[in-house]
Structures are given as structure tokens and as C-alpha cells.
Length: 224
Image (cartoon, rainbow, N blue to C red):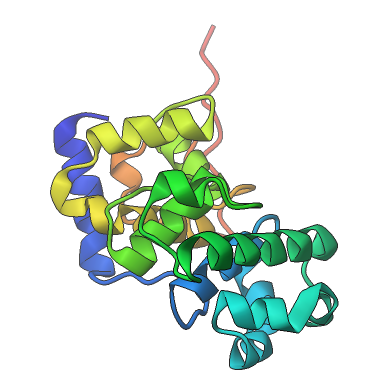
């Protein structure tokens, strides 16, 4: 995708949603960190259902330690891999209490040392909690980047590097949200809704998906 098309791509997404927001519910940087860690291989809606009651009681690492692993498990049983996630949340809470006085720092390198926290989770926290223009590549962004031609790469890290390079500065803060929402609701995994896509004409994906209830035109046979 050319620079001109990339700028137009983001401009259209911005025009439709000037101030995009993440869909995970949180109270502060710590609860956001916990929510994102819990969201791996789970839906945001499922995580929100579990963390709603949890975050009424727990809003700091120390409160999480006071709740304990079994207490946390009771809140997150409906989330996939809940036992392993509970262990990680308790461990990262202990580390924050012991090393940072319970404060989540705007430091990617440090965040990636926390149990259960990878680059994607760290980038989400930096972007949403601290307003740092990072791009966290999840399955949606990985798909959108490759499918549209915006940022091709064989790994999430590779796609992130391309996006960091090609995304104009004015769009970097919200690029993460625009691309995730586009992938979640329009450029869906099994069958993208090309017929209602605002950037369909800029996208390299073929064949385009027609509107529901319509069939693509039959191929013409050659005479002779």
C-alpha cells in the first residue's frame, strides 16, 4: 500500500471514529494490566463479565495479594486458562509490590518482565493507560495488516515493525484501536464484510465479499 493510500486508509477510519476506545473495562493502569493479561485467548466481553465484580473489590496489587490466588480463581473461572492466569496475576502483583511499590510504570521493558505479560500486553497498557503511541499486534491487527496490504509480515512482531514504520505520526496514538475494531467487526477472520467496508477500494484483498443474499457474477465462457 502506498503512503498516499495509507494516509487515506487511516483518515477514513478516523472520520468514522475520531476517539476510539478499548473495549476492556478497567479502573486504573493496574486493573487494565490485569484485564489485558486475562484477555489472552478470551473475548473482551467475557473478561468484562468476570472483572466487573472483581474490580469492585480489587484495584491495587496489594489488594490482589490479599484476595489470594483461590479468591481470584473464584472470580475468573469463566475465563479460559483461568488457573494459569490466576498464578500469573498473583505473581505480577507480588513483583509490582516488591519492586515498584505497587505502581505500574510506563516502561515496556519492565512490563515485559512481569509474569504473563508479553509485548502485546505491555503495548496495550502503554497506549491506553499512558497515552504512548504504541501498536499492539493481536490476531485482528495481524490479519488486517496482511489481508489489506497495509503491513505484511509473517509474525506479529514483524507486522508491528512495519506498522510503526508506515503509520503517519498523526495516526499512531489511535492506530491500535482503529485496526482492532476494524478487524473485529468488519474485516472478520472467516468472511470479511467487504460490502460495507469504508476502505474496501484501498484494500488488496480479493475476491471481495458481496452483500448477503447476492451472488458474484458468473464467469463468462470464452467463445470457440
